[in-house]
Amino acid sequence: MRLNQSGFARSRRREIAFSAVCFLLLLGLVSVLPDWAEKQTVRASSSAVNWGLSFPEPGKTPVGNAAQDYLQQYDAYYVGDCSQPVIYLTFDAGFENGCTGRILDVLQQHQAPAAFFLVGSYIRDHADLVQRMVAEGHIVGNHTNTHPDMSAISEQAAFQAELAAVEQAYQDLIGQEMPKFYRPPQGKYSEDNLQQAQQLGYKTVFWSLAYVDWYENDQPSKQEAFDKLLPRVHPGAIVLLHSTSATNADILDELLTKWEDMGYTFKSLDELPEPQK
Image 1 (cartoon, rainbow, N blue to C red):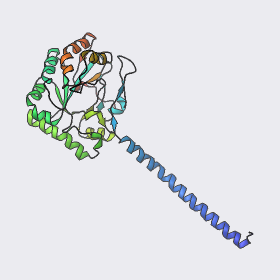
Image 2: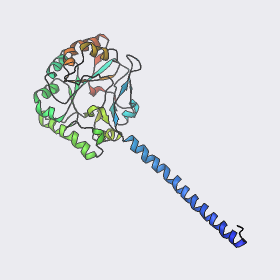
Image 3: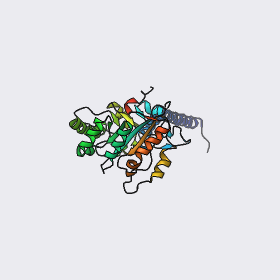
Image 4: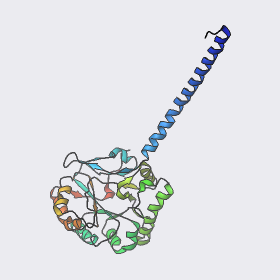
């Protein structure tokens, strides 16, 4: 079909108008892409993370799934002073099964400070043990009130409520403010959680050495424990053990002696280096 001059002009105007509309749509899409990308980054940074480690070389600092310099901006740690042969002992406890007293005996014998990360019910139900921890110079840290997956909690008020209930139980029992050390249950966290804890004045404490010791009815042997804990120890190690482990109670004296023979000393979480921001 052939167009006359006026038809051609009309067709040309439609093409120009269509091109202009496409250009404006493209311009609008480009303008919102940075905002979209930023929102995706925020969403990704707020997603759940399970704390994990790899040990590429025996006796050296393991690689965490978040770097220490990243964690430090939120007052969080997984290792301490890596320039010195020091170990920071920590124990998690969601309940009591008779092992903690023996562990405290060994710590006292070695004059080794430790941190016990406790849930709210432990403080309320085992006052004698908590009082002993404090009297013997150990830190009682916050392991949340009900041991939930904290990475699923995005609201600051709900996050704070989990920690505040433990703080209150400690205050009621000890008559002092609870030390501001927090460990996420199961090592599950998000970047939002790191910010939430920091805003409440807490240091978040992960770990750089642990082993599968938490199954009460399926405990590792002494040799299995030593095979994991001896070659992987390293300067500045934050060690996570469970005080419900009968194996830990049985081997702790020998384990601490072996570490001492390797040249290690024990420090409190109070002596963690200040974050380099």
